[in-house]
Image (tube, rainbow, N blue to C red; front, side, top):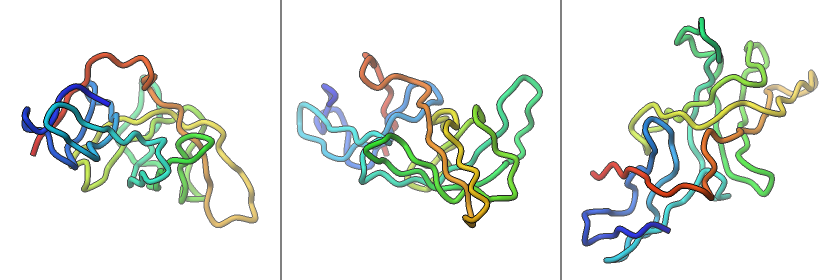
Length: 140
């Protein structure tokens, strides 16, 4: 929950971030407050890209995928089996609902089952959602 609402120009679908880090989307806006749906929410689904992490990285996309919330955390699915994605690479939201290229977190727990047609992993968020005090809201 945040302490700004429709009286402040906030409406459903607005993007919540801290700098270039994605936090979530506004799912309900009352006059005095709003509800933010985080990526860990089971109803959250976003298109993402995975980029290599490190000082000498390029902007070459290692793989595209889809993140969704689950009881275990933020799950990334549909990572190409032929990609060079590794634990520690960076996951960026690249979805039309967000309208930008915002960092989400780091790849952890990458699956490597050769019987599957794609890899899965989890995302370790860049920020701890429980300790956030200030956020930015991109209003439409």
